[in-house]
Length: 172
Image (cartoon, rainbow, N blue to C red; front, side):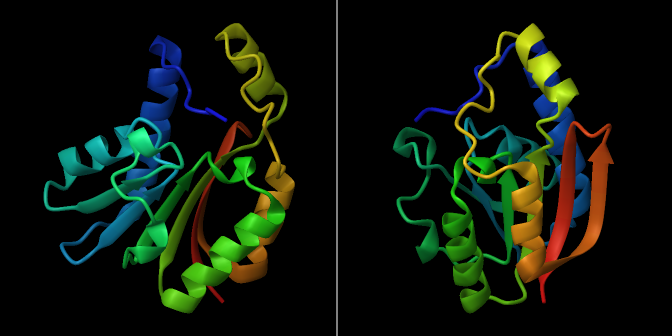
């Protein structure tokens, strides 16, 4: 399974906007260790480092050639970003990940961005040549949100035209 979006001009702009919005919620300080879970091509880390050169960001992806580490569970982090990645996991896998994070650091902050997979998403995906953008969906956006809220409460949220949502979460 290779779900790294092949960038074109529009997708670069889309992900740039999305990443800038995530960064606006991060409040990075020098003691933070940020894990970008499902980092893809690593563009989020590049933007974080551009704004906060002291930031400690670690990229993890199941595609080994994109990942800086083999096992994300071995990293001590206090912030984790899931940017349009949880939909590729089953509900049980997401549950297991959240349980593990909470067991290691119940004060960890979660920054989750997910596609709403609605009409506009499908239209833009088709027009941009990514007509199969969500074909590997294992967990729908509604299921993803429900799972997250089983473990966490929302501190901040942002909904962009029902195209994507960003939640800043902490464990309950």
